[in-house]
Image (cartoon, rainbow, N blue to C red; front, side, top):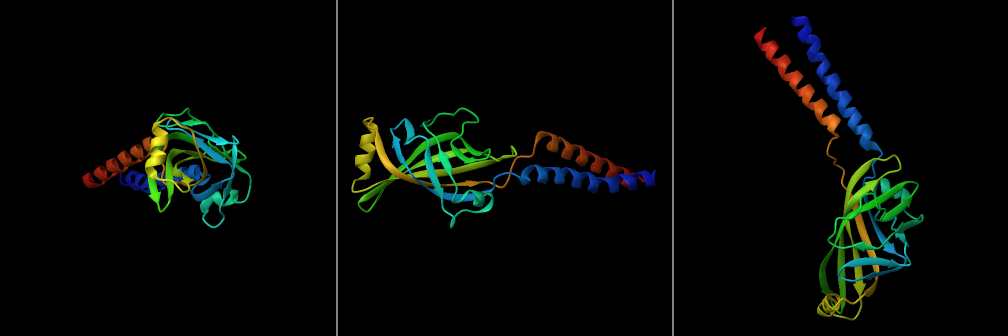
Length: 209
C-alpha cells in the first residue's frame, strides 16, 4: 500500500507539469504586448457610429512604442475597418484591425469617452474592448482607445455638435494592449480539479498509514 501511495505522489507533479505545459503551449502563440498607431485616413463619427474615410484605412504602428508579439507588425501594412456602432454588443469575429496573415483584432464593444479641453484644442477618446487572434487561432483579451483631435474649438462645442446629430471628422491615433492572463480552458480546469482531488486523497491515505 505504501508503495502505491509513493507512486501516486510521484505522479502528481508529473500530471501538474503536463497540464501546465499544455496551457503554456496553448498561450504561446497568442498576441501579447502593446502598440500605438497613427491613422492614415480620417475618422468620421456621430454619437451613434464611427467610420473611416477611406474604409478600410491604413494604420502605421510606431516601432518605438510597440512591444511583444506586435513588433512584427511595425512598419508593414495594417488596416482598420468600419463602421462600428457605439454601446452595442458587436457581432463576434468581426475584423476591426487586420494585421495580415490571419492576425486580427475583433471588436466586442466601443463607447464614446469624455470630451476633453486641452488649451485651444479638444480631444475625444473612443474606448475599445475586444479579442486579439493570432494566425494560429490563439486568443487574448485586448483593450485600448482611439483618440480624435480637434483644433481651435471647445469641448462644449464638440459635445453640442454630437448631441445635434452632426457628423464630425477628425484625424485619429490610438493605442491598444493585450492582457497576458487568460482564463484556463474548461478541460484544463477539470484536469486541475482532478489532480487536486487525487492529491487530497493521497495525503489522507498517507496520514492513515
